[in-house]
Length: 444
Image 1 (cartoon, rainbow, N blue to C red):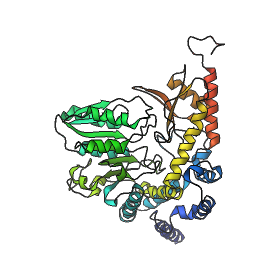
Image 2 (cartoon, rainbow, N blue to C red):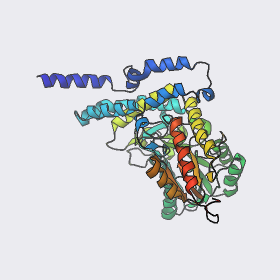
Image 3 (cartoon, helix red, strand yellow):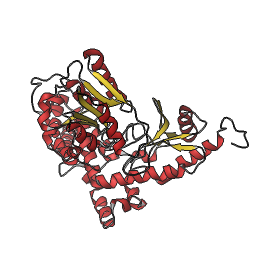
Image 4 (cartoon, one colour):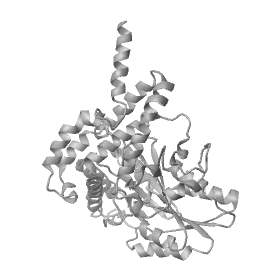
């Protein structure tokens, strides 16, 4: 009898938590009062001014368990950790699901997707019926890449600096169907938007149907002039697909303002949603022309939900996205963007003063935000990445691809200035230890 009562009590409490946008959401339970005090404290400060206020950001840092990790994670551009409240939400909904999976998942938690869609649309600045919830940017963008009707000989323009999964998808269509996949190459950093737009415009022919552009280039953090590219393309009757994996949840923008036709993103990067969550946006009038990547009973429907026919999925992760949105919105998009840009510039400007250290990313605000590439003269990139991890317990990612050769560093809001001082100290020690070929040991 007691076990039965405990079970009913658990289910009752769990049901009360069903929905990250309810009055009993976890974020409000854990953080609301403290964060209201924080907001009162920072009244009158602009996002740029607040970006340097360590008292404010120390509260944010404490909300992440990653802050206490012995390994310093500076690869948030790969996957960002979630704050504790998001982790707890996923755990609670997972416990609920496992009480009776087919009941609690399909009849209870599945009802949470529409409020989630509404909340994502508010952040994206678009209509809710233009948003599909899925698992990552690869799934979102592959849905569009494989879902558009293209004919043999039709051209698609992308670049060698796009994300590999997207390049591979276009290459697969080219190999299988005979479309023409043209890739441009850019030598980043570039601090001239018109130069980038011109390169795309120059590649267009009468057969060009699609331009694929990455909003924030994942390798080195270059922000691309997406709106200018879209306007140029649309003047020529060309559609634009935007890879927003590294921009959504970081940069302060509305998706429709980019003037693109299609946009896909991962939510487990700078939004700090649970690992394995993503989002697809398609301009309303174009939904019906895109075939779903996975089967649907009405594939030519104009209902965005046709892209969510995934079969059994992780409903706890979806509800965790809701708590990540609560967390993000309580900070504010502009505040987050300015803080992360400040963190990038903080370490990068110090690193530039170290002899032998080179940056591969612009530090001008319109051309970068979170990500920067770094290298040390005389040391191979893979070796630099290994030394940072093995000797200094700093996790980054090493990139040797096409014309890019650097270690990518990407902090997040939970990263402290002490963390970045640790990185700069490590780079200084590593640079001191390198003997540059052609110089004597004394000269180097």
